[in-house]
Image (cartoon, rainbow, N blue to C red; front, side, top):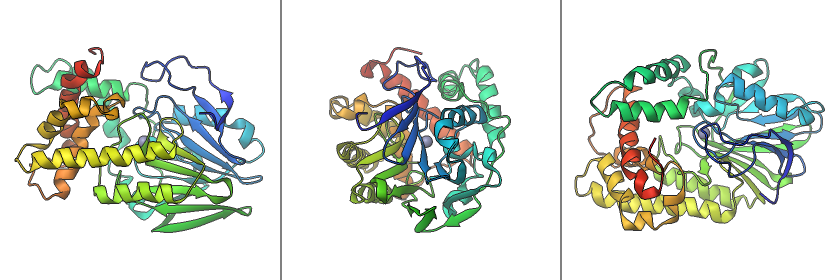
Length: 359
Ligand SMILES: [Zn+2]
């Protein structure tokens, strides 16, 4: 990440999930007044968080998945926060890894799209806490792929502690566009959802030619589309490119180049084409995703080198839903968990082809 200066290096030697580091964790200065807390490698909960120094006050873009990691991030941000305390928090979307640290900012303005606020209560911290504990027992259930599912979820959730998390709502919501001017520093929020989630926003700092993309952009990690439609998600990526920023901070992974964003657009084209052909042959979504992932076209593509390739299963389910497929849907949160159970199985079946050692 040549265009960024590492100001505070936490010195970790492996990721939260135990992988070798692709970049160093810490607080980076990415522009004159823009900063990013960057967490390698960008897997589950390894979320990048923005900070904009507005001459004596600052704006935080997203919080962490739990209070421990949010506090850890705040201590690394002290060199900036000592001169410019946080005045305003923005949530780019409702996924827990971007807003479950909000309660540490009670009393400050918290800004998000209206759709983000509405979605924020869909997943409860208590439910994830219960799931985390039940993973240990599910490991011994000898049917339904539960052993594989419990390993998958346990690996995903193990670094985090959800028992103290209280969902803390935004205090200011908007639709389409919102201008936040703090001490004369312009920060423009654009609603680009629904796509990754129901209420995605990107944050533009024109003076710094800087944009924080939230989770419409994953770099080196397979993107995921929980909500769709795909057209919106791709339009959001084109919007990102149209801002002509020099620096783009993705929600997960290292800083993005314009080519990286184009690669994500190309991934979505690839997935759309591959999955749609199998949808027309009446294949079930997880089978279609598995089929595409086992194909030569996928295995020889750059997408096979991105982490969490199995997210194509979730992406296939979302595409099918928007194509009007009549799927047997369980009530939430069981529906999402059932998709993740299928995703865990596909991850296991494709791992040897991707050179991933068995769990
Ligand atoms: Zn995220």
